[in-house]
Image (cartoon, rainbow, N blue to C red; front, side, top):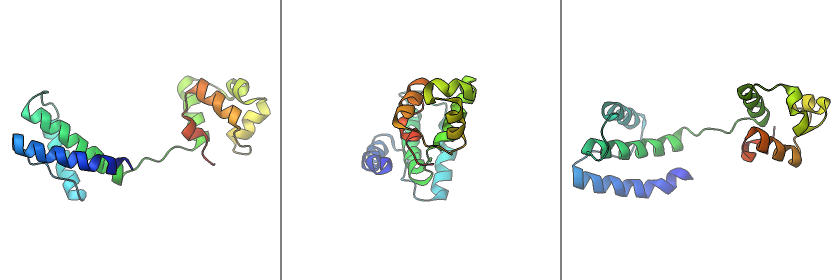
Length: 140
């Protein structure tokens, strides 16, 4: 998991900065800690780089990101919802998917979740709509 990969280096950086800059950054263990960290981030948000507050901002942002990754994971979207969203962004209609998916009736079946995407369709959708394959290969 991403959070565990960052935990040890983040804690080491916190110890180093507390020693060097007298910062009071602690790991976020609960909602109260999280809220306090967000409030502090808001206060120092416009800090200049290479300043004590700028360094604190950078480190605190990593600690907050680590906590959010662990506690508020973002699920991947449903493949068909992702296709519809991307079509809306690009101003496409279902008829525009015929080249990627096949017949007009097949497009309709896929968009209504009556037919599964094939590997070839996934490749074409990935190439043309730039939807990650990790999203398109999910069950629905």
